[in-house]
Image (tube, rainbow, N blue to C red):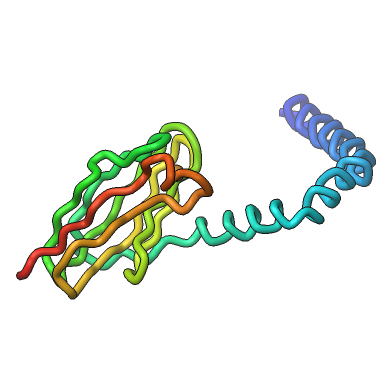
Length: 152
Ligand SMILES: [Cu+2]
């Protein structure tokens, strides 16, 4: 029984040493980050990323609609729902960070590389809406689709 305990203690000590060693490197490692953050472009990207972490809440009993995001398209690129219906957009990304956003509708889901995320969606007004990916350049490259909201 003692040996494993000693091994664990030694591992913890070794880990602590490694962390301390890493800690010493931090000041130099931070400098490039800080200088990058000084550029307006990077500030914008970081704020962007914060926004992408928040998904709209999914209502109980929402119908799940799976959407695959790849560079640079959505599959499917047309989704039909009924006005007032609660749905969950289940977004999966294979390659890199993509999101699902509609202007004027409260829906947002973001999925990072290899991840699946869910976001609630409900539209009360029938009509056609365009969903797209807000990551810079993606919509322009073709990442958009049509949400058709039918009369109940
Ligand atoms: Cu995208």
